Image 1 (cartoon, helix red, strand yellow):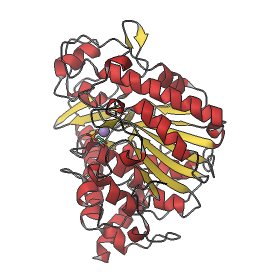
Image 2 (cartoon, helix red, strand yellow):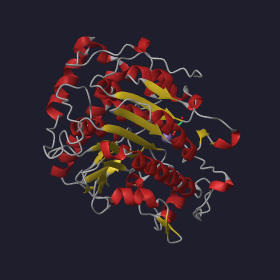
Image 3 (tube, protein in one colour):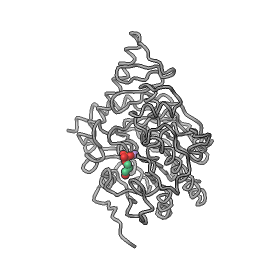
Length: 427
Ligand code: GP9
Ligand code: MN
């Protein structure tokens, strides 16, 4: 019922942060590219195998003076993996503790998502992905989120040699996506979801141009090879953006959706990190994924704030100069000066600049050492824990109760799903 929103509104009111005036509106009217890097972890950035960088292009992009990069940015997904990441990115709502919100609540629920918000500001909105449209219920959830176009696998030329694993190989995907991109009225909001760097990291021989790691764990060792391939695909796409001049009037956002190497592969992870063994603290650190924002003229650098996927939308809205004083969103702008830096994992564990709390164990985030909290530290940690459980449960309340159907967001027109169709037809 509508009154279920009351506790949520008052929580959000307390937690909202003011934008950073140095960055507010800096990307107003620009095209937005969201490049979804499949299974891409932060440790790959600047990582070398046999003295060679795995991702030379992404490394350069990460260190570019016009790129804002974040080195304490965590994925916050659960079983919904990619779909949880998309859910957070587009709505600043968490995925669910079990299953996939996009699948179970993507079709019927009301949303006030990024594509719809931007479309109502004059943007063209499109998602691109080289898999079938039904995967993760994208074809329905995207309508609820207000995507005007969804260029799924039906839109690209198909040949057996063009695909590997779940779908189209990234190099072909980026190239084929370009023909549709070119025709989108500007400004646009375009999300490109890559796919080749996906477990079990298969790649056809011609495309393998990087040495596998040698941990002896077969599902881990080829990871750097598909990551390298993804880097090459991104490099081609960047060239295209530069050649067409699109890079000049666009904000390019990159992020890793979730881990590629599951925490169960401890011995292999230890070897990759050149450590004797890894503990829960190391594994929490291992959950970092890249988040980068690039734009001509943007004041870049590596920002050390602690945050995660839930924080992306508020960050982007502020950069685009879109007020979000009344939105039902659980993240906060990564560029805001006084933001709360407690990063919730979906299971209730959390990381912050001071403490990393995994189950009942408390680590000092700076040193990685287990600490025995004093009475006053215990209170501090308890407050943080409270914050985490509150935000997760309130977000769940919004999704499970479909509460946005009762919420009248100022200046926002409710999405009418019937207006959308993504069916491919020739000509
Ligand atoms: C499938 C792709 C993979 O279309 O997005 O999803 P994941 O297995 O990474 O959740
Ligand atoms: Mn994924």
